[in-house]
Length: 208
Length: 161
Image (cartoon, rainbow over the protein chains, first blue to last red):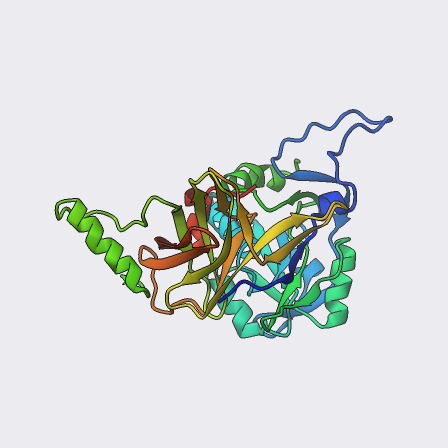
């Protein structure tokens, strides 16, 4: 049970990767004062029309199924012990604190970056441990790559461990789409359920 | 339920009871090196668990953590989030963790953590499981980790960064 060496998980905050900054300070526009606790990104990510496979085996058109809805989406894998499950647990806890009307307007989507180990049943079991309404998506290599390009995040990378098995490097932020079908806000590891509870009502109103 | 796997901790338990005049006291490692705030987070079926803890080195000499064992688990390995300086961060497996003299290091969400493969399948939230931290100089230190769920991490475990 000695510790092993080797790269395990790449966590790439988009905020840094694409030069995240608050959406303000433009010379020809008034300063934008953010009302959310998440990080505002500029330019935003446009909600992509990409199809993947949902945990029930059906085709899931991300753009069509979530259009106009506040959608929290993140990438990860079920063998991830720290960042991914903490994200999902915090989101699940936050959703329980919304009003039923607010909760009904929020979708949560998890895209596996480890389709080899994350079978659809495994993905479903893992998501159900947080919230049975969470959507799990699994795709082919080309579908996953298209999704990653749409979100401007580096491709997930498999890292083999000296002790056997492998880990998967992947981006670690949660993207929040607002009703205008753009993700203006991201949540990096470290955001709490309180932060989501604070922000979601703003996101539902299209404010950030 | 408690899951323990080493004789040493039972010796400590008996000693602790004797010193306390048979009062029921928490089982703790001797205060030479401290392992505290230990939480084992139960995973979904088929996924590894994660262990968070604080490790204290009260001595005037720097030490190194070489290994962590979790009773009943298949294996454990430590990982940490590392800023790569180019906007990227990697979680890396860690071979050894330095613990400066008279200092405490934290394995906590978003920072260093211990990945636990094959955790005991019978554990439930509220249970305790024995963990052993192996220091190069101070030797093995036993502690009990409280089993929690991921939903409890936010409220119970301080973040690492």
